[in-house]
Length: 144
Image (cartoon, rainbow, N blue to C red; front, side):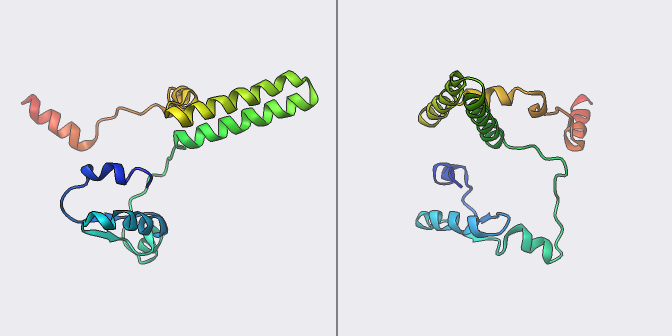
């Protein structure tokens, strides 16, 4: 939702349907787009209402945490660790809290997050490069 105004050029000229889980954030995004005079529709009640109405839904069973969520967890754990060790072991551990605060401030000011970059390279965040059935069929046709 924070990117919707800056990504108007990505929207096609036809109608746009905004969807979120409960429908509230989609309504907020629709209000943001109202001055743009686009054909905007919101899925009332969100995906929850869609599922409750018995309509089909494709879901992904295996989900990954977003990099933003992983970064918040990592920063929070490091700050808690630094504070705990600073109170029990040595006051020098409080520098860890200051370092994380400096990193978060840098990330907020520059939109560059070294912790996010590192987490993005971790094995659990690697994408698989499996061929889909469509891509496999297209490559087989191209081979002929």
